[in-house]
Length: 199
Image 1 (cartoon, rainbow, N blue to C red):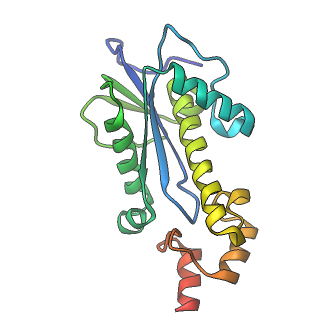
Image 2 (image 1 turned 120 degrees about the horizontal axis):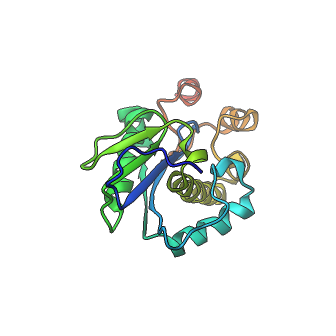
């Protein structure tokens, strides 16, 4: 982990990351986390580099040890209305607003910063470089994966538990076979194509 932020007066630093910009179904989910410097967590890194078992264990540890954490989301209808970039920014704003402690600086994974009431810095590959962002990526990933598991129970024929809503070969096959669910993102090209075929 490296210390990249350029706001040395900051005492309460929140890390923010998103999961689910690429999928064809479900919300884009973000998380904001303020870690406790006096209660460190070992093994934090980009959630995609961790096994599911390790992610679940770390998510519980983060929730137990963090000074504050919150989840933000933008639903498929909001993604369709705003586009995925603006919906992601909205979900990040909601995550930061959901913290019960207001941070005085926010570090965000990627290269774009949502409009916030406090200073912020975007860090490319921040989920691998900054502990707070790693923690946020883990919380968001676990939350979204669990939502996909629930969606899988409601629509078992689509295989959501396997592909988590991403545009895989299996998902394309199921989409073509069964059409779109109410939770699919209608503005995304593969879904739009299916809807046009089935209208």
